[in-house]
Image (cartoon, rainbow, N blue to C red; front, side, top):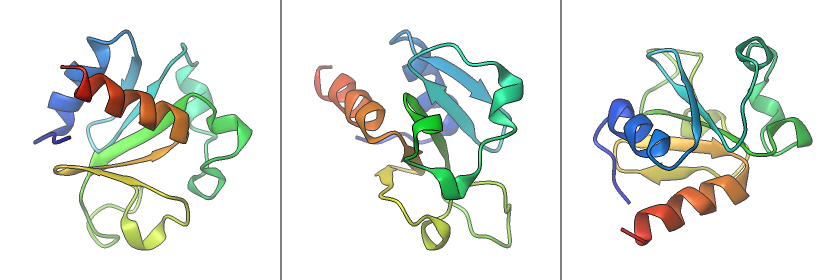
Length: 105
């Protein structure tokens, strides 16, 4: 599974009836509609907890010095996925489903 850019991933996800909310630096993807205001209250340290059910965050590889609001391997204490030039973390069931979409193509 490989995505060159966040835009490529967002187009892919939207084509599979997933809901995408992006800021340019990262994108939230969900299997259900979310109030964008709710996303502001999400904390990275809560990844995998009930508030993240059906929700993941995806962003390009980066480092903490470049942009501290995105997930980076050294700050994520939950499993994350590498999809080419992107990192993804959040609800593992949703991440598995997205990977199945790729395999089905």
